Image (cartoon, rainbow, N blue to C red; front, side):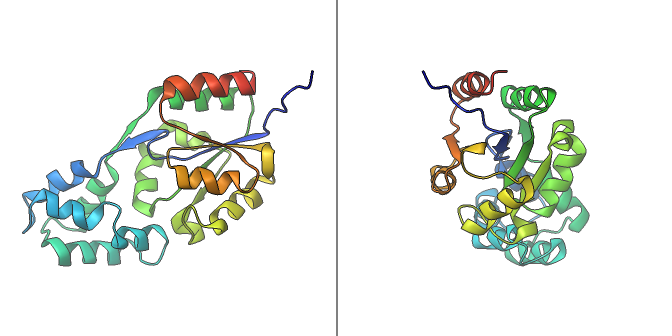
Length: 205
C-alpha cells in the first residue's frame, strides 16, 4: 500500500480562514461622521475597484483615504479612518489553533492574502499568531492579486516549494482552482470542523 506524502509547508489565506472580517463595522462607525449612510459607505470600501487598487499597491494610505473622503464626505480624519479600517477582524479560534499546532511541529507556514497595508499593520499588532508565520505573500506588496498567476509564483519563490509540497487553504473556489492548476494540494475551507481534522490527519499532528 502506498503512503501519502506529507506536504512540506502549509499556505493559509487570511480573511475568512484565520480571521473573520466585517466591513460593516467600519461603515457603521463612519456613518455619523459622513454625508452618506452606512450602506453607501460599504459600496465604496467593500470589495470595490477602489479597494482593489489599494490592495494591489496602486495607491497608498493617503490616496486611498482621500478617495474615500471624496466619495463619502467622511470628516473624522486620516488617523481615525485608518484605525477603524484596520479594526474589522476577529480570530477564527480553531483555525488559529491549527496554525499554532503546525508551528509547534516546525512545519513552515505562509500567509497568502489579498490585502492592504493598513489591515496588515493592525493584524501584526493585535494578533500574536500572525508573527509566527515563516513568511508572507501579500497582494499590495507583490502587486498581484489571487487568482492571478503572479502571486502564486511569489509563494513558490519565497517558500522554495511547489506542486504537492504545498498544502493551500482558502475560502474562495477561484483561488483554490488557481492553486490546484499549479499542482498544489489546494483545499477549499468552509468550516473549521471539517478543515482542522482533515489537516491534522494529513500532516500527522
